[in-house]
Each structure stands twice: as structure tokens, then as C-alpha cells.
Image (cartoon, rainbow, N blue to C red; front, side, top):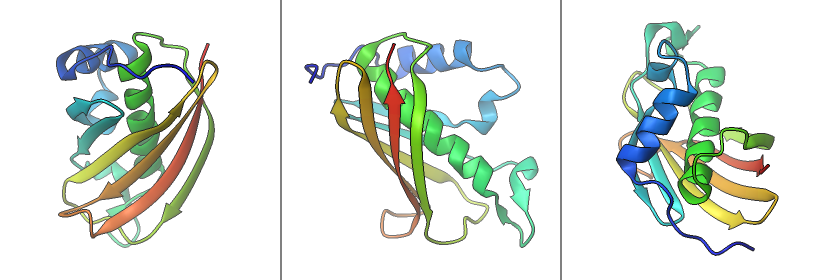
Length: 141
């Protein structure tokens, strides 16, 4: 296991994500709220193109947020390594996501030399109103 230390602060991580994703895609992948040791939080303002029948936010939009939050917490600890890639993602959707701010809370469970494991939870309003819980694995170059 690698010693966990921060390589990015909020501004540095935001700048990296701004460069890593096309400008048109950035509003759909969330904004960095904070960066702490083993913990990154993103927020997302749902957009009309994220709608699904029933006037809720779509699963693919939420999975994107989960994946980017996991990527962000990994990068915050390994630095600017664009080719860290998802190798597994398991999502449990727990309730419908309404048209309010979505919080993605990503916590680094394990950071190894080749793999990282992250717990990501989505909620609205408070942590008691979980929308989804996910375990994400990242392969590190």
C-alpha cells in the first residue's frame, strides 16, 4: 500500500479536471467542493439533458458523477496521472434523484501501487437521503 498524501488541493484538482474533460462536458461531471486526505466531495447541479422519464435525473448521469468523483479522489493522492482508468464499478441506486444539488462523497478505501478502491455515496439535502452507493476500482498506470 502506498502512503496516502495529497498531491492536489481544490484549485489544482479543479484545474486538472478542467483540462482532462472537454469544456462542454465539464458542467455534467460536477464541481470540486473540497479535497481532504482520503476524501473528495463534488457537487452537481442537474441539467435538462440529464432527465429521464418521470422527471428524475438519469442513472447514466449519476454514474458519470460517481466515476468522476472516484477519479478525483484517486488523482488527489497520486497527482496528474490522466491514464488512471476505471476497472470496476458497482452501483446500488437507492431512491430517485430529484432536480436539486447532488453531492458525491468519495472516500479512498485503499490506494495500492496498481489499484485503488473508492467508496462513493450520492445524496441530496443530507447524508441520510442517499441516492446511490458505489464501490469503484481504478487501475493505476
